[in-house]
Length: 398
Image 1 (spheres, rainbow, N blue to C red):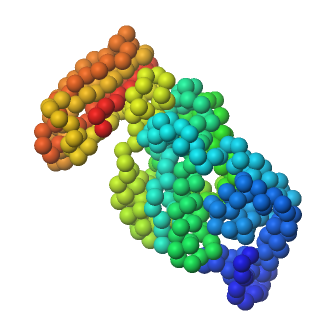
Image 2: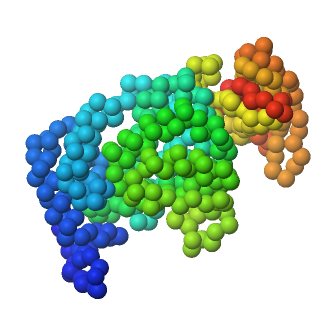
Image 3: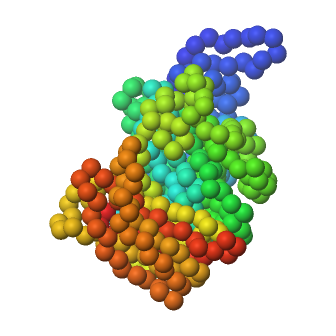
């Protein structure tokens, strides 16, 4: 590494460590493995893929350290993984993906379940957030999973850049990694379906192989009682080191004291007990059911399940005239659409209620613009008490 400062300490049978960057203990064995890996890589360090990797991970030393620690100082395995990452970066994970596919990228940005929050802790950890309630497994039948993966990894890269910028600004050679927050509220057995599991594999596999040791800790919150069954399907996909960093909770951070939180409450999204306001997420259904710019409500809705999309007064301020356009579709079953004007502390004002059957297909509806000080809330509800239905809603003007 660049430098290894501090005195070697011995205490009982504990491993000898050298204090290096703030928050990091590195063993002599890891230091030697890093040097060995760098030597073994040889000319590979000149490849475009390796230069891209080191740019995302501060330096050649830091990149090699991540692989060495991620693979328990097994230099042979670490070398194989770095070589594979070089190939992956030169073929799949192009940095210009957003430029090549701007419409699809923008679509996924507004609807995909996960995102880098763009915030960073005092010690250099970036936060990323996933809301599983917005993951509709049926969408993966209509959207290339590679496109989902491209966007997913671009968000990881965005978080890495944020951490690198923090490290360079603060004169650090190291950053501790992501604090990953997963809101499992709304998880159902549909998320254990084969297409859902195959999508997860497409993200988890390359994520572990090409971004080793980049997660500091992961919290899975608001887990339902049957989540244990889903977790048994996901857990084998994770390495032992990754599994040890995962904390599964039945509730969220709202019941915790500030001292128990992984970071300041101001950096935690509101839906999981924090104070950070985040952009409204829309249910991801893909762009081939009906072209609604990817801004949709639900897709496969359970019996009597309701999904709500909301537009704030600020988001509707640019609309001239007194009408807001709402588009709704129902491909199977029957749904009820209800539009209301809502204001904190006051009873909602009903603007429209309409029943839509599967034969209706795509319906365009004009709803009265809410009075001053109010938001527009549009809810669709599956009318069946026993069957799932397929429907969605979009407030077009936002």
